[in-house]
Image (cartoon, rainbow over all chains, first blue to last red; front, side, top):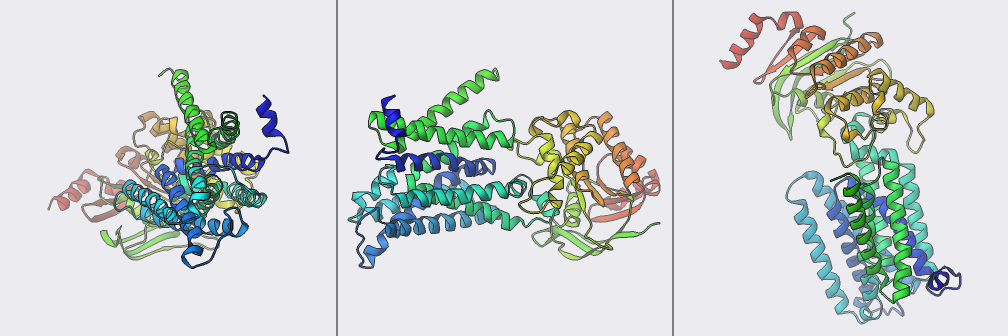
Length: 289
Length: 237
């Protein structure tokens, strides 16, 4: 309990890391719900990795062009990483979604290839970068440690924007996802709503990858939504429960990691996995299967 | 008074620019009940989807006569096409019909919610308000989808095999209801079905798609033994 009091204290040194983890934990499942419903789970795996490759390449650009970055936590480096992350994830999601709609080839094959190539590329880029070893690699592994006030505000602002858009346009996004034909008959601009949803997913993934790394981003996108789906009876319960599971796992994962001196990202994801397994077993027992 | 609502002039329909049916010249009058018959793969659903704007015509044109605002279609698709992963209740699905009248970013008013409840009650689906849509039987889903089509306040009700997989009793109840409400509210009905007895009972006009050919006429005239034998002979020839 002493550790709990410590991390809840306003003087806690890593409070920005805690707040950011919890913000990401609450926000990622909200778009993850749409990934699960649209059966784009593999997209949820590939996108964070592609986004982190964008971060690696963006942070390497100054080096390739002969500029010097002073430290990882600087605002300019963070903005550069944000731009790289968002450019890669948005391009990837729009291209992959376009190919998906054309319905040719194997979607799993495309996503799997995109994932593995992006992972290899980010390792290659970082291995040839002197700054890679002193922080960026930690960030990409999910070591949520050095988060400045600026990073926290940027994360909070972006996730608030996503939350507002999801709340404001929920019925349009749901209609286009559930029954595209009805949306067309009701004269809704289906391509616009599809693109908006992909933009929101891309923005959330970018922000999450930049704040907590691809591993946690993937974990928070999908596992809370999959866990909540077993118990929820309607869309409102599904969305709220997924968000609540994500936010709680982020908080308790941070607490456990701090207590036992573990890396935060992997602790969060393992905790989510345990919750999913318990949820699955309990659901089977409840339904008498 | 046989007022023309939809005319199709030398229309070709199909997918990806490849015609499946050509030379369709048809007319539908306001407040009429038209049945579309044909074997699987004859182009019935393709015709409906082209009419609804879900597929572009390969050639030719469709003219929809409307004095003021564009006509509203109430569409009842086949009930097995929805992904069960969506945690939507019967009420949620029926409520989607009113989305066309709600401006972007606006909340759905209590009036529209009450109207949706009324539509669900009208089709005998009040017991499915809070039940998961994915867990309803085929007939129950069809009732919810008919209620959803009615919540659009349609000028034209388009039904794609609404009684497929539904028992005889429910089929009769559903078609009786559709027939009555359409007479009462002067709604035009286009019904795709395999159910000959339903066509004989409710449809005024029949469009029969058979091996790339189109036959049309009054139900009483087209569904006689002699005329049907003629159609099939032409098909076999």
